[in-house]
Image (cartoon, rainbow, N blue to C red; front, top):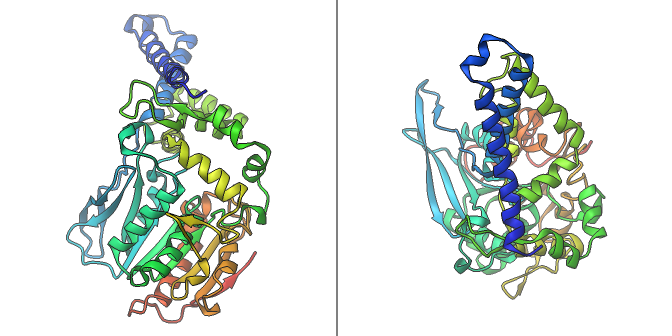
Length: 426
């Protein structure tokens, strides 16, 4: 599978379907056909519209769509997305609300590199902008990075986080969502040993596989069933001629998307069938619920082969983070060296990707951290997405995380009467 031909074949299939959708829509929309109304032509136009949009979105990076923010003064302030640190494989960006007084809470939101862009956290960013200065790790699509930029594996990812934390300074509160939770924990421990003054004040780990064996899911079972040789043979391809990263070995976004959708194939099929029906009846719109969800869900990015393979081998199979034997740049990280950073874990009771138990394992690894600097929360009834972007996040988890930040900020921002480091379980 490690040929540019395979990559270009997938892109050709995607491009062809986009063209078929556009052609069907154009053909069925000829004015002359309106003289004799035909339901088949209406269906053809609706199918074409949905199909063209679906396959087009697969290669488009979504926009953040956060242009203005209404502050307490009642005015709309422009939001400038500024690049603070620019690197080949990812940038550190700041959502600067123009004309607003700087918020006392400075938050680094670590986005996952697991197939989707950092824009997947759009609603999370919006909710935090109210009370915080928000910074986000904006990872790049591997197909757009020339081979000359070198490799990028989980050690490089961890060192990027170290550099971002150093750039932001010690008054930072880090929130890691899903996949980066174990690597963010390792980056914090690395700083605890190498540069203690650059450590963040708090670390919030949301639904991450710190110890994948703590609770089995389909993701962990897959990691156990397949060998590294099988993964490298069937999942890795070389970027084709169309993109700047031509020749780079990647786990293609289109291949990832097919895996995502196959897990709930019937539900996705019904969703698209229903959308075609809504378009036929004139009930669909550019920003309806279907398009808002799938515009983001279908926008996938390639991961470097070394990042994907090292994640599976070192985090899931060998459990290097869980066993506290993770090595970064020749240095074995000791998570027990974290002594000043308050740590809270958040899990969803119905999370089928990173099940309860996988993330809270981080607290057991922090052997040098006092109990009053540890906290955990399991959100009843919440799935994976809900704990960082859904109603559970907005109503319950976000206030809890902000209280935890305030209780451990060392500043005057703590709201009185709120519990600080509480442990809750469902």
